Amino acid sequence: MDRQTRPSFTPAATDAAATDAPASAGAPARRSRRGWRVLAGLLFVVLLLVVGARLTWSWLNPLGEQTIDRSGPALLRSVQNLSRFEAATGNFQVIVDLEKDAKFVPDAIKGSRTLFVGAGNVDAYVDFSALPKDAFTVSPDRTAVTVRLPHAELEKPNLDSKRSYVFAQERGIFDRISDFLSSSPQNQQELYVLAERKIADAAAASDLRSRADQNAKAMLEGMLKSLGFTKITVKYAGEP
Image: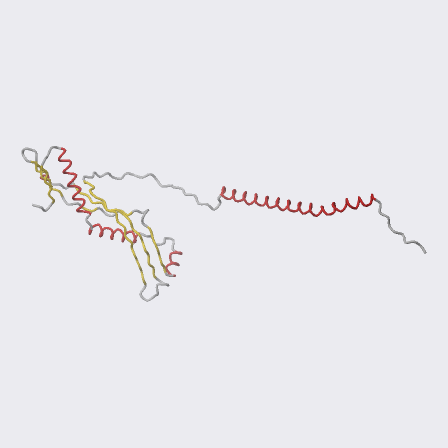
């Protein structure tokens, strides 16, 4: 009976097998790290391309608008001397609610409603150019003087375009289409005119003119006192 031949392992063979096992296990780890490095490099390159493209687009700005002012210089047409005293100024604000409706068509189809905030000033002044020759009556001893003044008047309202704006607007379908197709859409001139009219009415109903009369009187009294007058009487047009 033959004896079974058993393989014999030498120490050298055992050491070689132990050395090859870690090497074969570390190869996938190195490939994995190499893959992550390649991916990180690609992401970095893509990031650089995106940033570079954005900076180039913003620098070139092919769709950007450029404002060029080709207006000519302002020309002085006339000069007018003013002989009036600006005695008071009123600051007003009004909300214009303008609605336009069609008679037999719903508002959603034809019609508009606009809320406009109008802000501006109204000046009250006393015009000294219309003073008569006997406007100043001085006593013989030059200690008393009587002054006859016209009442203050109101200047036209001066709307401030920076503080006046459309707050809200509703338009029907036909109005939207008409404004879209029109080469000159509806301007805001009508809104400004209504705002000026309402502010003018508010100024006329206020005490702005009486305040201007008082300020003009105080100004004249101070000026005449500095000239040596001790008794100063200010009367307005229509008073005896």
